[in-house]
Image (cartoon, rainbow, N blue to C red; front, side, top):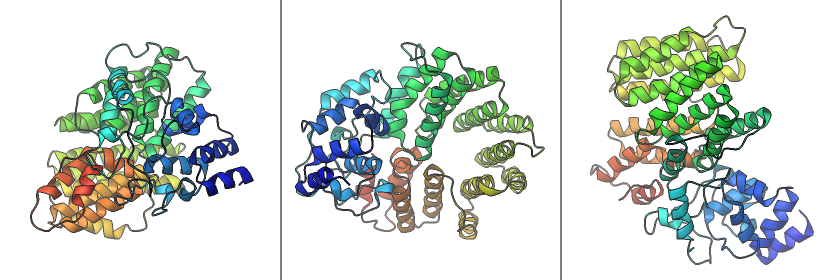
Length: 442
């Protein structure tokens, strides 16, 4: 570290720490803001000392991006910065008063949606959290709905930037990384502009990928209708693009939307037809990986319909395809297979079988925190089904440490937390704090 940065840390001059660390990282204020999903003015005001810097989650994210220890911003380092976890007992910087946010700006954003890439979230809106809640983050489900409704309902191409193909490809890849991190606030910031850019450039493949990613985010939430729009657009664009993998992934997401609406037969048919169009000669392992994933999705749909035999047959076929893969692709397929086995057994009313799958797969490595978070949430549902509220709560805490965005966004988590709040079997200390963090009224 430079002497200027070290001196600022010693003085506890956090605006100067931010400024010197950003210079060291060779990031402009706009670039740093985009990485965090903030408006550039947020960073400018922080560095000028015009915006108080006492929101723990925001400071941890700053420290992570700028490769600083949490203590550089005066935080007690209770957890690894990389986890992005907010300790419920340390929701504010020690010795600092509570933050008063610019509520007018937040409300304007939720109404208008924002106009520039990365201009979505201030990241520190107390008003979105329940009074006295440990988390000061806005509700990602509310933010996603507000931002994505503007680009899905109406003219999506309006005022969209025209990006070179290579830049659009990189932006889509970066958005997928944010999804893999369960960073849904960042996604809410960038996805609308990605959709608009893809529409303006009339790149069917990019449009399909953008709308598919929108659908993947929306299905985390309670059904609201927007997911039908994005899934339909993704499939239409995927068909125009003539790219089998892109189309099959779009159809997989449309299958999930149909399943959520109770149309299990159509959900299964969609993925099986998509799987049947893939090339399984082994020359492109991506086809094998997606084939396995599609069969897993079909098995889940069959379980939703109550057809256990069909569900197990499809999972067995998915496992056979996964066995043809090696390296990282094999690891991804096995992790997906494990997660679906657990959730399928839970749906079929066989929680003991689900736990047995979990015990037999301790060595499975998940490809990203979103996939791991989903698995842990499903495992918590299994434990709740077994009448084990304590273990279910502890598993949710583990999921929150590993994938905080997943836990604080996903509707399934809110259902489990509601059940834990309302059960009387065992007292669950801390459940009200968790409820506040996942935006459930206790």
